[in-house]
Length: 106
Image (cartoon, rainbow, N blue to C red; front, side, top):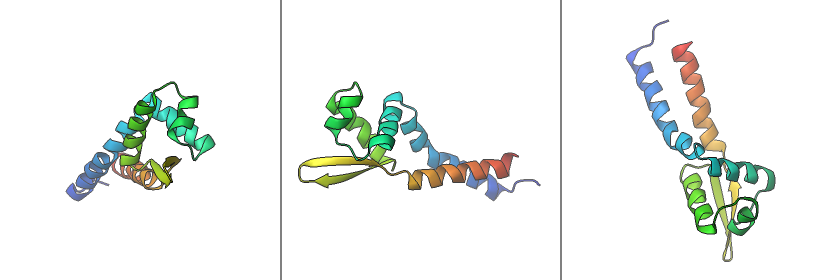
């Protein structure tokens, strides 16, 4: 079955929607943070710093990138921010990409 131009446009759009997620996941330290949160969530920056050899400002920077793409959420309690994984929307987007590629390319 041949793809229509609309199918191709949708596939390109789906790929483009995944760029920020893949970019965020492309950094080893952000991968470490995700894996750490998967085991110990929720954690604050100090708790993350106990496990990952980065400065607190560097960890905060990585957490902001992960938050911006929807991979991490923050819950503020007083003056403390606790971070947790928030994979729902990102996983939906990646699954949509996989389905689109399977449909368009297989």
